[in-house]
Amino acid sequence: MLPAKTVTLVTLGCSKNLVDSERLLYQFSAKGYRVLHDAEPPKGSIVIVNTCGFIGDAKEESINTILDFARLRRKGRISRLFVMGCLSQRYLTELQGELPEVDAFYGKFDYEDILTVLGEEKSPTACLDRYLTTPAHYAFLKIAEGCSRGCSYCAIPIITGRHVSRPMNDLVEEAKLLVGKGVKEFQLIAQDLSYYGRDLYRRNKLAELVERLSDIEGIEWIRLHYTYPAEFPMDLLRVMRERPNVCNYLDMALQHISDPMLKRMRRRITKAETLDLLAAIRAELPGIHLRTTLMVGHPGETDADFQELLDFTAQQRFERMGAFMYSEEEGTFAARHYTDNVPVATKQERLDALMLLQQDISASINQSKIGASFKTVIDRIEGDQRIGRTEFDSPDVDPELYIDGAQDLHPGDFCRVRITEAGPYDLFGHLDNTFLHT
Image (cartoon, rainbow, N blue to C red; front, side, top):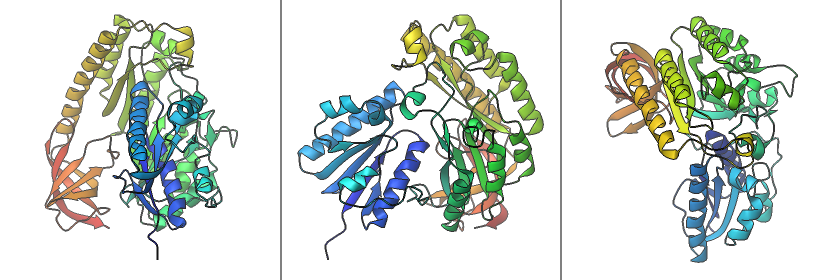
């Protein structure tokens, strides 16, 4: 019997890309291929690179990764090379001319055609199954594609088009299928969760979707990523309060707080409205952990604008915060209408100052947890150490919890852990003599 052909898929960029990779890997696996993810490709492997094209650094990483595999292709180390994802969706013609070593390029929505090129039949596009690349107890659930907001700096609508919600019944069925495989925790993702349902059902349906998912037996945690502050679905807060398996955690990218910058960014919200929204969320959901993303150096940002952002961050004390520097993306509103007039050195100084402030805030919040006990999921084992997360921590981006006294537990087990020490980014604790369940 001949050995199975091998497909190695490398995923760059966000968790939304990861879901696409998992769908494609499932189809190859169903056809009898040996599938690998983010691994060193064995000799003769078919390699697929799922690219990111969001900002300059991501595009550079994608190009360098393709070039590395192109060299292996020229040397005969790998048999075929395909590229898919955001970068090739946006720059298809340019890439085809510059990278002849690549067998074919595909975008965000036609990547299943790789199967056809290799002589395989595609499964029906309605197929909901995936080959999970995450630990078996959690998965990402992508509820929509694209974005209809039109922020000045963002190329996502150019790459993926307007917001398209996935049918609610499909999402519920996909979640049930994954629960049947052992998934207990879902991270709901989209470019903009807050818009869910407006295109498909003519009104916001995020709260109803979360309710229906939380009713599925076997789901321990549902966590919400990438909400948008303008026209935020306030009925979601009631669902979060009432449903114990919906984590007291919300990811909402705010980007800035000064009114001049919010207007130039085309964020469709004011400072006063933002402050009212944050106050309402914290009042409705005491103890919630808010994750946000902020931007420095957008065209027109003055020292006064940045100081306002610093003051806002100090006052709000976000439990989780990431920040990045503006980079001009061709085709965006900002690239067409603004001059990138903030020097790179100034952008870097502002970013450093903002992240230094957040480091102190994060350390203080973590310190306040010492002595408290939290429901925790075990993610992985390193030697005798169990490493997990609380409901306030999303995989890959938030603090991990290093646990002593939990040698009998395994990934996917839930327990209670009492915090004994805290650093700015990680927590340390001891099993609280309460093993919840597997």
